[in-house]
Length: 380
Image (cartoon, rainbow, N blue to C red; front, side):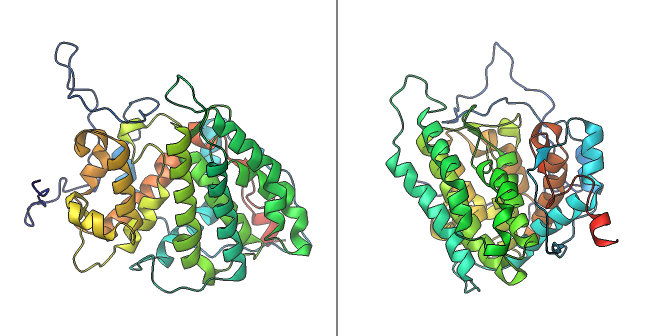
């Protein structure tokens, strides 16, 4: 078999002004001349291009890391509620201290794994080991709950059984990591946790659910259950195991991709592994963004780098030319450096996930992630 060719080393980036060339505004194929016959194993929900102004993303500042603002004890926890219903709500949220500190936490996680392989040594607290054990338990449930025999290819109804078990056991799972003085936080953190693994009614999963998992970790950080010293392990152990679980759920129960990005998005399901994975590869001596087209590199290094692992999984579950089923990731491979990829993805995450009403309308706000921020909490 002929080895896939690398891009020419002297080939200029695909765009001189942006790391992400926008997708075509309309399909070049007519009804008479249909597109090439590639078929994702799990088709995206709607194959529409994003309508975000790409120039606005390019000109936006790169999000910066922030220290997580700790809560003051004693603290009154509350059941979180949905607050976002309109573009005006999104604007209020994205400009709030809550959004800035949460996104700063995501950036801090990205920086913690910068230039590190997954196998590099790291601090792993007892609490982190317990969180990993919880996720491993959820993975084990997929073995105990086999997919149902059904005619429909997508959305296996056994996922609802798996999700029901998750909901039924969520409080006991949280008690494994909560100290006595924070056990009252269950009422607030359980909803983030149970909404991190997909929707049992629609049997789907997307970047909104992934963001809920990041929000759950952020809540643990605000309560001091995880600390900055844990961040590298949060990514290389906890988040990697979470992605392993989600890929297992996607494969076993054929979860539908949530939302409307489809093939024009980064991935039918995930965004954060590409942010963290691109950070891992910053300043790598040999591997460049174009290296995703080298099959030998993917085979030999995907177990160490999340970005490459994401590419391998996409190629496993989708058929056809990579440039056709994953055009944005293909465009990004033309960016000259991983640092530029990482900064571009952080800006894109803010614009394409945190600023999207269809995604964030399901996001929850309580006392740990407050609607309109926490200024009054810290400046009494």
